[in-house]
Image 1 (cartoon, rainbow, N blue to C red):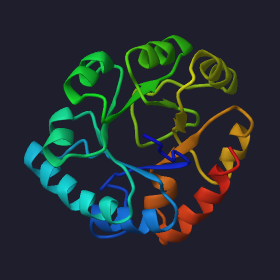
Image 2: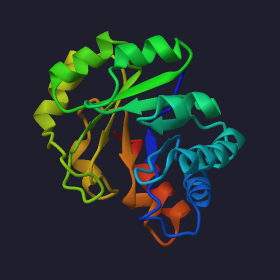
Image 3: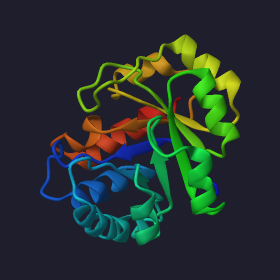
Image 4: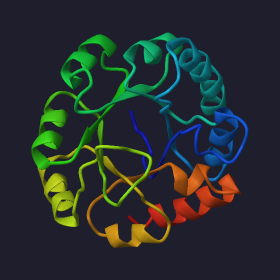
Amino acid sequence: MNVDYTLYLCTDSGLMSCATVEESVEKAVRGGCSVVQLREKNASSLELYRLALRVKQVTDRYNVPLIINDRLDICLAVDAAGVHLGQSDLPCSKAREILGAGKIIGVSAATPAEAAKAQADGADYLGVGAVFPTSTKTNTRSVTPEIIREIRRAVTIPFVVIGGVNAENITQLYGLGINGAAVISAVIAQPDITKAAEKMRAAAEKL
């Protein structure tokens, strides 16, 4: 599956500057977000399922892949494009066994060893971070430019960087072989989500 990872949006209903998650997603996609991850840690299974259906209507309309954070069951229930797994989630190899070859699987990695294992276990892409301090994720491990270079040497699959990335500090990451930037507050917390996405997209295209 040929996926454009340049600007990868993670949702967060606690940060968005508009009324609904699906509205924030549509505004972000209009501005150039090319992948959307539904990441709502506090939603119940039923709430997440219903929200995923609504968000998928938006992402389908714009032909943008919808990735579900952590939850294989929700991914399968709404026929999302794929799932993103952390290091403490279900192993990537087992997820691949359950989802089959047709779904996208992303894995969070902060070391070259984790990255190489994820690729060997069937991951399609990696989320590497945290590259900058961030308030949206706890228990993050910081990743330096040198670690990013090492991860690039360790794997051939695409990876996006995550963790406090914005249109200003992303310039520090140019030339490291990154395939895209994952954003939350830099886009959906801004007063004009579409304009913020356009600005981030232009910056991320130089990675």
